[in-house]
Length: 447
Ligand code: NAD
Image (cartoon, rainbow, N blue to C red):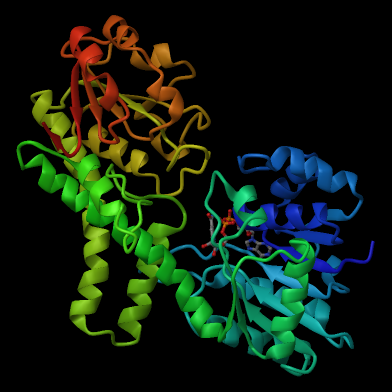
């Protein structure tokens, strides 16, 4: 198979992207340095849990247009290569670009001396200026003339985990941060073919605009969450208030919008926390004035505070945590995924354990968290998770937890049968919970 497209880094973004392209008629080679991951994918087992991905991967292999390997050699003839490797936080919060550098160096080795026009498309989230630097390195090491033989685009990915396939199939916008017109045109052709000519808004702009816009999107979402959480804390101190009513009133304002206005224990996951940290680091490096840096830092501080607040509520309502048996429901950073990177639930468990609580945890998809082993009991069944606990904390609002009946809690829990529900999944059933003798406490409701 002569590959048209290469995808480097087969995680949440890369695997979904490569699979979708292969099912839409492209010849695709996926490359990852993680041998186990590649083996699992080749056997049809995606290492990440994403709605529709299993079926789509099967379909992609059946087309005969999809290959997955650890060898960069397979990318020699690829015309367009997308880089989707991780850009995690380094020790000081700045984006760690080492995986990206390694990928560029490996690509340079196989593209050295090529005569065909090549397009490098970076999709990983990177600080402004990174793509241009990486492109210059690639051009220099591979002996390619930037612009003439090597085109470059920064093309951010905006997918949401848990709906990654749907988001890739129906993106809200396509951002093409291009080195020159030929680079942008080449990528636009890929998108036009992928979406059979029906495209969402396409924004063609500078590479740096695209890089900064990706951070800007995530920081805006993070700010919305921290703002609504601040208001929930305020509602907790104000009689006759309910954060959901307030959020609804705010959200109906078209200038604000209703999404990302659900108060809870804060944002986690592999994107918002690390992108916020990376933007703070980048802002400081560019000499952003202190008040503006503080604004970004405020988003982070409120987010970190939310887990401490929930633990403080538990401590108050249980009259101390030493020796108390607590069940934490949900380990994934949000429902619909098995991703536990920067999960607030794990932060919550660590805090509870540090205060002497005996914690049992349950999640529909995550069956254990290696670095919590020894301190926490992970249970397969909900009954085992709840049996004999003094309190339950809903850490991840999975839909299956909304369906737990008050009678189940009443039968299995021990005194004082506290249910701490920061996401308010039981708000419509308060009377039933009360009648069953359960103590229900929400975040941001003082009615
Ligand atoms: P991930 O950690 O799930 O996957 C990254 C993959 O890259 C891993 O499989 C790893 O083995 C591989 N890799 C690392 N170094 C490599 C190399 N030199 N060559 C080939 N493969 C290599 O990461 P992800 O969640 O898919 O995120 C990838 C990028 O996309 C990040 O920059 C992230 O910020 C951004 N992003 C993520 C999401 C999301 O929801 N996860 C959404 C939008 C953007």
